[in-house]
Image (cartoon, rainbow, N blue to C red):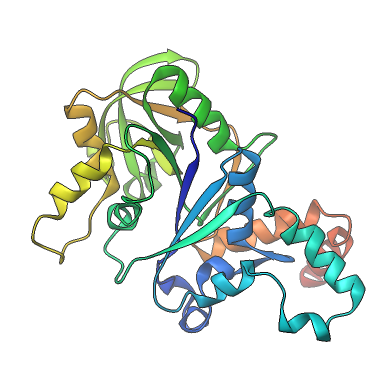
Length: 291
């Protein structure tokens, strides 16, 4: 069955960017001239996912407004500005359905994904893209992962080499075997291990292809308690224990973690230097700051 659904959890609080994120979602932080969330939407579209579901919570209305068509604003915009919006945004999402799922209270990534349990067809695969992770490369990373998942009839998680001193900030995979260069069969997953307990140096980054059956695992993990965070890595570990094949795909893309101020600034510099409209301004600012 062809993959149709991509789930984009966007209900996080963005506390690293307070007080800005008190009023504006962190997913709307601008990377030069468009917000981080648009990069994720465009990756999904490039990978041919026709149905996108954004999981949102309180305070996320600006995301909904951003992707809504122009209505009353059109009367106040110049024709050239309307054409710019159409080319840069609305033409790109014209053949994709963007819908919204409410997560009443952030309770972890597993809980956010559980909100999509009624929109994914039985026995199908679906994608998950985390808005904090901007991946830059020739092809859509999630598209290559979808191809691998269908070929191997497996769940797929994106991984990359992580410096030893940073490993405790990641979910980390234990490797059963290397199927081919950069493709691993996963034996185990550990969420934010101590350096000495990490099963490898391969940290999970924000792209997943998952089977619909993971919702039954998440439901069981929920139980009657809604106090603890629901970790996706724990649910994928239970997939493995049930005999489901899980593959780690080592991404070749350049990654920017825009969930941190440093990663956000790095992304701005990257996109600015690679856009002829802004490259010279970026260079001039650097030169002046070093004087």
